[in-house]
Image 1: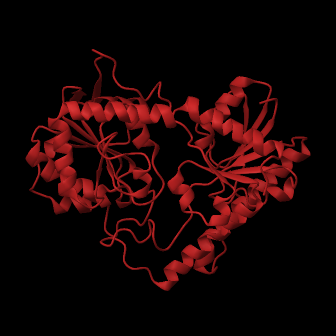
Image 2: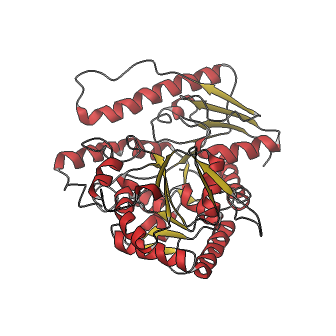
Image 3: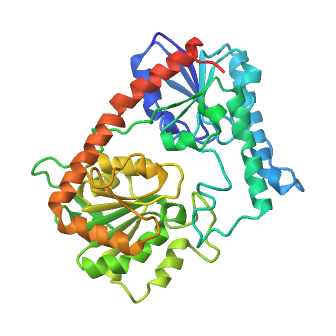
Amino acid sequence: MAGVKVLFIHQNFPGQYLHIARELANQGGHQLVSLSIEQPEYQIEGVIQVRYGITRGNQKGLHPWLTDMETKVIRGECCARAAHSLKEKGFNPNIICGHPGWGEMLFLKEIWPKVPILTYQEFYYHAVGFDFDFDDELQKEPTWEETSRIRIKTANQLINSEVADWSVTPTHFQKSTFPKHIQDRMSVVHDGIDVDIAKPRGKGEKVSLKIQDNIILTEKDEIVSFVNRRLEPYRGCHTMIRAIPYIQERCPNAKIMLVGRQEGVSYGSPCPDGEWKDMFLAEIEGQYNAENVIFTGQLNYADYISLMRITKAHVYLTYPFVLSWSMLEAMGCGAAVIGSSTGPVMEVIKDGYNGMLVDFFDSRELAEKVATLIRDRALADELGKNARSTVVESYSLNKCVPRQLGLISLVASGAMTN
């Protein structure tokens, strides 16, 4: 791709643009600028990373259904002012690549009416049929007021889809959540997994992981892993915790590792009384050996990858929602994965070939499959080998990043327009 001027928009840059921005910066000859509210996670050499602030808060007394939209409008205004400042200083991009989820991209066409916009779309909100009404135990049948709130929440997505020239989303499941007229102008390209980091142990390679002060895990341990940003029902923490007694009954030596923050939620409703982890642990009190159940909190990336390289069975559960990178990273490490038989997981895992599938709510079935993988190492190794192949062939950086860059080039050239 010849020299191009790209403006990246992400509240916490680089986010999903990490590998794309790095590759463009490494190519040289491009002018790369990012706008974000938060302090960027990484400083990328070759990218001018600009922060802007929020200049006002929400209005008191506003209709509660409009609060979310007002927050997005405020962010959109602040981002547009920062973009206007860039324009006044002489920066005029060839393309704008951004995540519209928090409202930042609402008014960028008013600054640069003729500049193509490529939006990164993650998920379209629905009151029925996806994540909002999936869990009968924890999600009561929504009232018409609650579904109305979700209807209003889609306004930001609809406005952004109207002004965008094209959109991209990581998986076919995520694409399927959008209305047909948006899908017609949307490509499916994953962000990509670094398979040179997320890779299996080499033959004879020793890997160890120190947890807390006195626990050192190696490939010799019967490790069962469960990893999420936060331990919450959207990612099946209740099913996993309820499976603990059944897993220990079948595999008393198993070290059950639950990784993730234990406070609050990233998705869904907070626990009505305390934290979700504590609520579900209370259900199994006296039924399990707590010494072999380890809540690690958040791990640094290197330790997390080490865990994926020595786990005997990795569990990934999710509502019909956005697929986590962690499942693909575990597969890239050659882990034998047990995933929920929900849409985002079934797009990747073929039961009995590159992993196992389990009913999201069935803790007993989950425990049986964990035990199978711990006991049948030949099967686990075969599933892990095929899992690695799946990620290398379809989700690796060297496959995904060129596709992303090709799409950027096409949209920037005007070949793909609204």
